[in-house]
Amino acid sequence: MNQLPMSKRVAVVSALVEGNSLRSTCRMTGVAMNTVLKLLADLGEACAEYHETHVRNVNAQRIQVDEIWQYVGAKAKNVTPEQQAQGWGDSWTWTAIDPDSKLIVSYLVGARTPSNAYELMKDLVVRLGSRVQLTTDGLYWYPHAVEHAFGIDVDYAVLQKHYGAERGTPGRYSPAKLTAITKEAIRGNPDEKHISTSIVERQNLTMRMSMRRFTRLTNGFSKKLENHAYAVAIHFLHYNFVRVHRTLRVTPAMEAGLSNHVWSLEEMIELLERRNAEAA
Image (cartoon, rainbow, N blue to C red):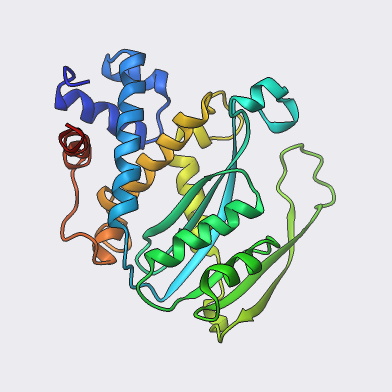
């Protein structure tokens, strides 16, 4: 990897964070597939480590939480026990976002299980520097996970969307019709006008547009769980520190006070050099 010039590494990472597949990235940059995969893995680990150590003491007022589905290798219903042991099947990305700064405060890649709901909330609470109003969807594990992680030190509400089949829509991939939205205060004193998951749901769309692995009805899905997690780590580091948010006109990290400038892709890739130097 040290033999690959910075300009080539920037070209590869730029292509990946803009939603290109691995093969199209190879064609665009002239870099071999194995080299692209190694850069993905090394940078993914470096980005995950940076997020772990530096996204701390976030002074948010509100947090929205949601989870987005994708699969690795094949959908769960089509996976053999041997493939499941290799990490194939449904994979969920759990995210917690500050709707004001647009900062991704916490995330987790894994199954949609009670233990992961607990892990997300345990990770979220240690990254916050103030009491927040928290909104989740109606997933029934969340209230217990929030109580376990936050105790009484949170204003928590659940927003539940109710869907029904839309008549006269025979298409297989037609979206369900939204029939009702209910809001329920669970703990503390949440402000009803801020009980919302719209920002985190918009972030889900950004993920699908910015990572080829999340694009529906294509063959760009991840073939390895590890590479899937690396791509998510790169996406969130780029989203928080490099990508200028159109409405904020700064990056989410700058808006949240975690950075004083817009990172370049070179600065993002230099996390690798720091990581290698610390390991030496």
